[in-house]
Length: 368
Image (cartoon, rainbow, N blue to C red; front, side):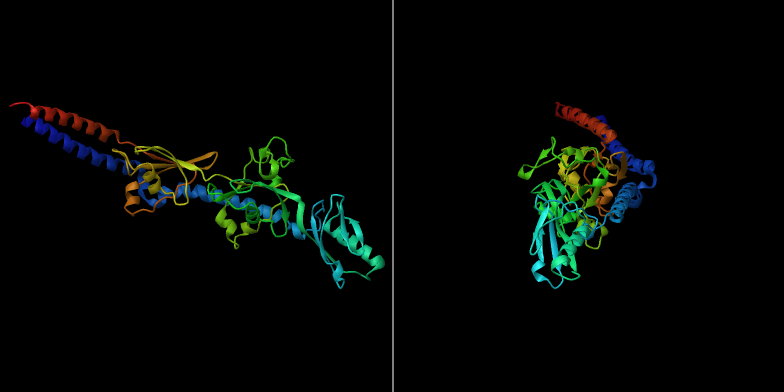
């Protein structure tokens, strides 16, 4: 009996010794990655590089696009709404919609053909017509109030997806989202912009596409296989950020993706996919997965992230240090994978102890 008790005590001590070794080993193999700054730096660098690339693309668009409302090169089309004012002739001041025939109807002048003219061309034509009979050296002001012939597509997780006309009061992404009724609860907090300059021509026509409100369809060729400009919704809401002032152009597609999910696997009680939220972190992700299993390696939890479709970043995180508050918690992004490795050594020794305990328990229950 003493031999059996001594064997059990030896096994328990062995588990403690091996547990201490397994806690020290990751620190030796990971080098300086115990430091939170070092551990997080690959992801931070990848995120920074992605943000930098996005900023560069936005800056190029800002430089190349002129404000449609003030562009005299814009060609007027059917459905456009023109705001017209003539100095000292108040009866001419009005908003006129361009008919399908291509005309606008004005006092004194009647029907005036304007389709195909630039804004400057409309200005010159009205000035010439008024100058012939009614006004000496007329001072005419013309600008486009609604670009009905200029359309942009709003797709994804919004209340009313569809094709919308551009206007002076709705030429930015946030304006378009508002026209579409806002985001649905399933929406991510980012916007994907597919600029017309980077997509195949004719993608807003209506071959086989996605049915949306009003029976309109949007050809998925407008986004499939394209690399969007991904913009954080908070950046769009920040009026001091140049991204917020980016004007949309005819043929642009704005897509709001699903909030998405992440994966937790390994030594947790309920491995699987979980829905992402704005408050998802390493701690909450493992908690959603039911918490840690029986034999986790908690100071070497892996976070696998894909900053871009062709890039993968893997970092080791010290879950013990994070839960203790010694290191900051890590935000979880869409598509992240959290892997908690199982300590095979501890699991094996625990099995040995369990088996020996059962054997000794049987021995103790036997009659002496």
